[in-house]
Amino acid sequence: MPIGSTEAENASEHDPEALKRHRALFRAIARRRNPKLRRTDITVTDEKVVKRAVKAAALGNAMEWFDFGIYAYLAVVISKVFFPGGSDTAGLLSTFATFAVAFLVRPLGGAYFGPLGDRIGRKKVLALTMIMMAIGTLCIGLIPSYAAIGFWSPALLIIFRLIQGFSTGGEYGGASTFIAEYAPDKKRGYFGSFLEMGTLIGYTGAAGIVLILNAALTDEAMVQWGWRIPFLVAGPLGLVGLYLRMKLDETPAFQKLEASQTHTPTGSATDAEAEFSHLSENAPKKKLGEIFAQQWPTLILCIALVGAYNITDYMLLSYMPTYLTDTLHYKESHGLLILVGTMIVLMLIVSSVGKLSDHFGRKPLLMTGMLGFFITSIPAFLLVKQGSFATVIGGMALLGLSLVCLLGTMSAALPALFPTSVRYGSLSIGYNLAVSIFGGTTPLVITALMGAFNGNVMVPAYYTMGAALVGVIAVACMKETAQQPLEGSPPSVATKEEAVEMITSQTTEPKF
Image (cartoon, rainbow, N blue to C red):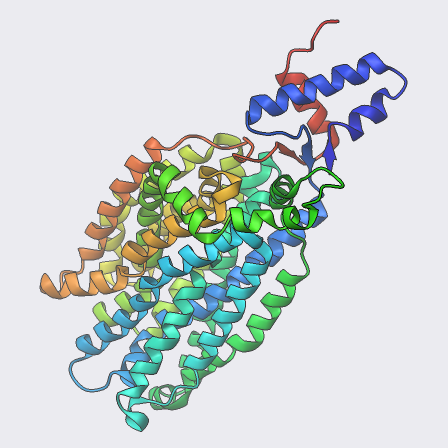
């Protein structure tokens, strides 16, 4: 709800001088927060609407990562179905290469869906990515095995993985932008943390269903048909996510941006053209040009942050089950059980980390997470290497505590790096370039490095430490954005009283 004229007029309707004073104060604070801002309103959020937006974005994100997670957790089985013959390592490398293929096209998806989201709106694009992801995952579950159709089996797998990757290119940037633009400034970290909770719910659901199937079915049944079940579940889940997203309105920040771009004097002869003029002005090519020409320093910072974050994230949440099973010879069900327990604990505390980032700032929490990985990776993997249930849990706990500092903070920190007009596009491009180069290749690179270094089980620790060091440098270079308005948007507050307090506390009242 905008105030600035409405709230001030209600408070001062019988005092013209007081009304002028209130308007002057609102203009002053608006200019101070954003010199380019033309309107003088402050957005007062509706908490119920914000919670609905967060739920739709987070649950939709959970559906996306459920689809993506099941491939990682079924890597060993998929290698037998689609890449039989040769050594187990060769089959696993082929499976992880196919896993990485989806990440290679993510930048293309980000470059397409991101600017499109800045052009036609966040909501429509997020609905489209949900449909594509569900279709791609469902089709993977229907592919005949290599034994049935030969070469066409892995070829179709790659095609549908490409569809998954392309659609996911528009997911994180859109979902995090959606939540950030709905949330009040002082609670953006808290509400943003639910996006990562959705990621954890998706991963946990994927690991849980694979765990149940492994317990209920024989190895032969899993290879023959059991592996298909999680993929076939994706269709109904995708419809649920689509329904939740379509029920929401567009974000307030995008609505105001669109209104400012389509504004024209009433009665103009070009009213019809002006109504849609922003579509040509914000055409994808122009948006991409603006992003690379004007946002490149921030893009580099974003890539460094996300690269470090995703290597640590995918190492723990995607690669670790394979590491425990293939390298340390754990039973697959035991490795998944430990990972599920770890992710449940992370889900329980991630929102508290989001609150801490609102109070202490994004940089302290992000730095804690990066330094945590740099310092504890070797001790953590030494514990995991011992092989006992207790030591594996201890090692996973060390890594998980470092990761949750990033999970609870990153989804609020990244959207704040870019202005509203190019936020979706810039974040999607930067995020997906980093994920493509570093995150999605993590299982493949670690598996290859371990083979090159004669199966050295400490390779994942060294790789994680290198990523964390890059992350430390990136965090040191970023600006603090906690409790600040998003660039290109007016201040956003939770209550009208907070808006009045903001103005009176930050602007010197003029004397008449």
